[in-house]
Amino acid sequence: MEQISVVTTVVDSRSVADILAAAAVAGRLAACAQVGGQVDSTYWWRSAVETSSEWSVLFKTAPDRVNALVDQIRATHPYEVPEILVTRVESGNPDYTAWVHAQTRP
Image (cartoon, rainbow, N blue to C red; front, side):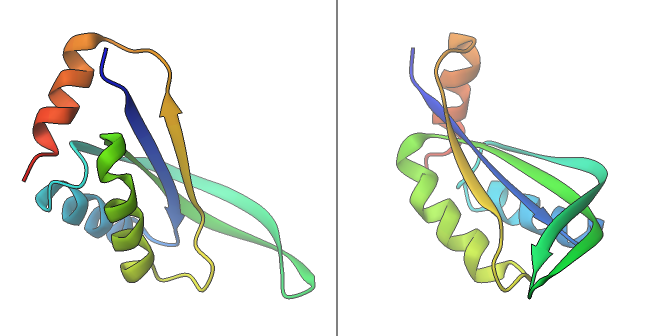
């Protein structure tokens, strides 16, 4: 089985989430991007506890495309310190993982 990676971020608006998702897929940096529904996040920021509504974006990609995807997210993300998490998938449907690899080839 070919391994895949899931890259996750959150942003402050649905429209920004949609833009990040579309750009990654159009650029073949991700085979698929899923925008999740609104979630409330609570976190420390500048010495105070903040709460805000955010939208999550999950990108499915091949491991050799992760660095380019992370670079693109960082370059276009509206946050000063964006959450960008990379998870390597240990196991999955071999047909799906092959599809992810095929879709992330320029």
